[in-house]
Length: 291
Image (cartoon, rainbow, N blue to C red; front, side):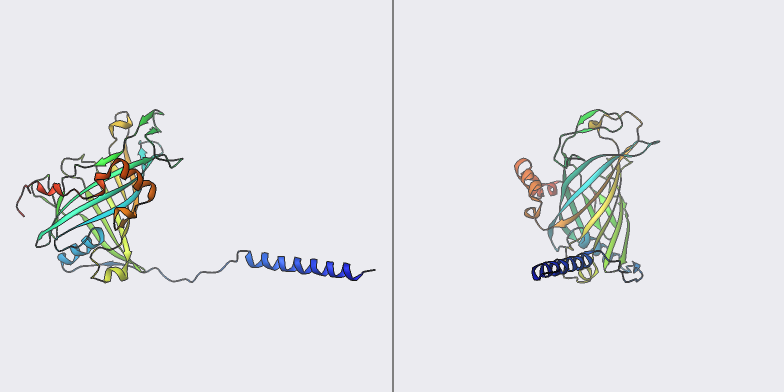
């Protein structure tokens, strides 16, 4: 015999179960076929080298009439490439590059920059001052890495002339390409004359094509990634002939130091405040060759 209370309770339970099942059914992931369309991939060619150089300045820095600055923020991972065995991750860095430049006329830009990279532990992600060499097993001190001695360059449509050199023009590998709604710029750069010859750097910068097409934007809000190959620093205490290091980085342009992540900015303001502004004194050194 079923009385009214039992019936109501049973019905409510069944209804709840049914609603629960429907909720679960609605929440269950469904396989949905994404729309299929071919990737648009085209190389972009420039008839005028001036226009190509202007595009690079907008992507990397700022196409200013007189002088300007660009601040970029990045993370990068460093690997030990020992040769004959698996590469090993070594450390993470977080850092900035501050570049400052002046237009000297006829699209000759004098460009200087400084970097600083703060080491982070690969596992805890905390700032650190030591790391284990994965090849030797030795715990070594890892310093903060400021780069304050880059001599600078003269950039122009004909190429780049390092200010530590004799005016020899380097023509970097540079390609622009369209990928769907993005425009990308691939670059390969060699080291300044007084750096180890084994140093090489390549990068890819990208931004929305609609922004690139708007020529009123002189500094494009680009993101970037790239790769370094470079020799072991002395602090790593690596035995002779044990290969080299490789660094892989990614980051973006930002508008001012105030946009930096809070933890990073706090440490910079506390320990390296002078590197949160351009070093215009670099321009006091004479240019060692004729433009």
